[in-house]
Structures are given as C-alpha cells and as structure tokens.
Length: 624
Image (cartoon, rainbow, N blue to C red; front, side):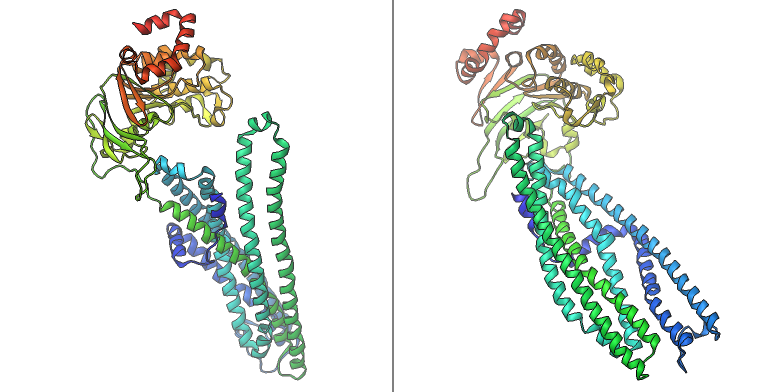
C-alpha cells in the first residue's frame, strides 16, 4: 500500500526549486528550445493581428471613418477593392506564417521533450544499476518502473504541452488585453467584468478535478499492482479455483477507477459550458454597449467587430489554464519522486583509492559481524556473529546449515552486495571495500538457486554482452556442462529465442544455461549457491562431472544440500545461528557427531541410501 499512498501525494502546481532543476535538462538543446520559443512569440503576434485586420478593413473601406489613421496606412491603397485585397492577402500571409511557426514550435519542442525523456530515463536506469541490493529490498519493482515510465511521461507532457501552452496563452492574453485597451477602454472593461465569476468557477473545477485525478492515479496504481500479482500467480489462482473471487475483487478496484474518471468527466462537462455561458454574456454585453456606442458615434463598427473576435479568443486560453494547472501539478509531483530517487546515494561504491589483489584467490572472513537492519537506538539483529574462516586458493569449500543460518549472506558479503558492520572480508589480503566493484565482481562466476534468464537467445544469455567471449567459447562451455546436446535439438540452436525469464525452458535447462554462463566467463572464484537444488536427479548426474571440471584449479564456494556436492568438498563449514560452529572434511565432521552429524542424519542419510542403491559407484567415489 505504500506505493499507492505515494501516488496520492500532490504538491504545488509550481515549485521554483524543482523547475530550475528540470530546466537544466533542456540546456543541451537550448538552440532547439530557443527556436520553439521564438516561434511562439512570432505566432502570438500573427494570431493577435487577425481581428485587428477586420477593424482596419471595415473602418477604412466598408464603413469609412473620416480621419482614421492606422499603422498599416503606408502599405494600403486608397482604392477600396485594392485595399481589401491587400488586407486579405496579408491575412492569408499571416495565417500561412502562423502555420509554419506552429510547425517549428511543435517539431522542436517535441524533439527536445523526447531528448529530455531519453536523457532522464537513461540517468534513472544508470542510477538504479549502481544502487546496492538492499535498496531493491525496500523499494518494490512496480514503483521503480513507474518512475522510469509514467513519471517521466508526465514531465515530457509538461515540457511539450504544459509550459509551452501556458507560455503561449499568457502572451496571447497579454497581446489581446493590450490591443483591447488601446482600441476601446470601456468595452475592454466590460469584457473583463466576467473574469471574477470565471475565476470562482475555475477554482471549484480545479479542486474537483484535482481530487478526481488523485483518485484516478491511486486506482491505476492498485489496478497495476493487482494485475501484476494475479497474472504472475495465475497457476495458483487456477489451481485453487479462485478465478471468480479474483474477478470480483478486480471489478471492485476497476469500478473505483471508473467512478473517479466519471467525476472528472462531470467536472469538465459542467466547467466548460459555464465558461462558454460567461464568455457569451461578455460578448453579448460588448455587442449591446458597443452597439449603443456605434449608434451614438462614440465608437466604430470596425472596433466593435474586432472586439467581438477578441472576446471570443480571450476566453479560450482561460479555459485551458485549469487543464494546464493539472499538468503542472502532476509534473511537479512526478519530478519530486524522480529527484528523490536520483538523490538517493548509492551506499556501496568503489573507493577513491583502489587496491587490486595480486594472487590466486585466497578468501578470508575476519571476525565479521553483519545485520541487514540496524537501528541506532537498539542492538542490531545480527545475521552473522563474529564469523572467521579462510578459503585457500584452489580449495572447494561447502557451507551448510539450517535455513536462516547465514549461508547466502556470506556470499552477498563476498560479492559486496552489502557491507559488513564489523570485521573485514578480504581477497588475497585486500579488503573488498578497497577494491573496484567491477574488478571485484569480475573475479566471480556465480550460479544461483533460482536461475534468471533474459529475453534474447541462448548464446546471448551465456555471453551476457561480454565482448571477448567467442562463439567457440560458448559452445565449449555448453559442452563442458552437458548442455550442448540439448541446445542442438532446438530449432535455432544457440540462436534459439529465449522468452521472458526462460518460460519455455524447464528449471533444469535454465540451470544448465546458468552453469555455462559462469564457465564461459572463466572466473577465478566460483560460487554455487544451492545451484543443484532445482535440478532433478538425472540432470544432477549430468552436471556432476561438469562441476568437477568447473571447480578444478579454482577457488570454489558451494552452498548445497545435495550429498554428493558436500562430500566432495575439501572443507565443510557448518553455520548455526549466524556463527561458524564446525569446520572440517565430511568424515571429520561425522566423527565429531555434532551439528553436521545431525544435519546428515536428517537430510542426507536417506538420499545417500537412494543414491547408493541406484549408483553405487558414486558413493564409493565420494568415500574415497
């Protein structure tokens, strides 16, 4: 619900601090923005002159006013037909010029808006890539996706529609007001008399629509969250026959969105006719009082005709202001959320002075204390307590223990996904905090319990964009993990398309691709985090020899429950309640009859009996 509540917050329609920061994204495209703004100013002049031409053509030629002087006299003929044709040509020219300026303004402003969106989304994605894993534990994926999509779209709308339209409307209003006051002050004041009533209607409309738009955003957030959860869990939904209940619940959420939208539609349906009525009243007053002035010869027919046109144009920008207000308000709220994300500093970064380990890959945990959550006023909830051990180069070490004992946390600290609170994690004597992050993680090849595949091809998922890995290296890695035979059965071979998260592949097949991925990158240190737990027995036998080849000559850390993997390790570290309780070989730990012996009795005994019954030579090899 936190993400829903965050969408409810709406700040001011204009925040100078945020706007100044947003404008910096336009600086690389200042020439394009300058052309767009210049086009707006010229277009405003062309648009405002239209009714003035009506005034000139009527008062100079159709109903001539003696002694009339206009700024256009120097270019107009004294002959009525010629003069009217000249003004008509000037009007067509202004209209054509206005269309050209509209094209320039739209093209360059939309182009600049798209470039700003590109830059902002790139910055957000790059920033997310540098955030540590703990950040993603606290921030739902849906919320982060919204920052890159909907919030950036709102900013683009502000740049290309909101600010530009407001800028244009303000100058149009300014030009109309100036000309109306110059032509006839009394008629101008009559036109402006309805403005207080329009201001009251606009305030009521704005408040109503603001509330409706807030409810719409909350409803959309809930719809997206509900859909994401229930589409992802469709198997469970169908398995327990919960389709009808889920449908009714979705209908309730959907109805909330519909009701909010209906309220917004109602507000628009009432507001715009009210403004039209008030503007019509203003025009009627202009006609009434202006007509009386014409009859009394205190004004001209041309001025009255121009005033009617100006009054019609005067109220159009006012109608748009309320809509642009909502665009600005939404953009300010979106920018605040985006900048809050960008201002969140990465907690784990490469140090200013980098040290590079020189050695074959000796791993040392030196009195390590670690907690995921720390509160200054209380004792941290320690996940690891004073953990110390050493893994020698070329050694294969297995880490075992109950769920929650801290096994996977050790791997996370080794990769520096998190930083320790006390103690140190070292590679060849260098603290991982003093190493370049890219260099640190380049040393590792990791196979996780839950294999993750990206949309693309099989070879693309093995290479992962690493330029120096050749096609031959991919095929060799696939051969080494017994994946090649399966890949050759695919229609596209290594070019076969992989759908989202490898949905068309079995868990075992996805895991084999993960093995090939780790092997192809030729890591110095290999990490297998329960890598065979999702693999069936037959597949495990296929990859066991491959695992032996993978760990050969490499420092290897294995977290596993399978008997074969644990038995073959050079050393087994037993974790219990965040502490190292035992360490030794398989036989040494069994002889101690401690925690490992109990784990063996509970978890491995039955598996060993079954394995021995089906593959007696495996157990014999392990005991050797």
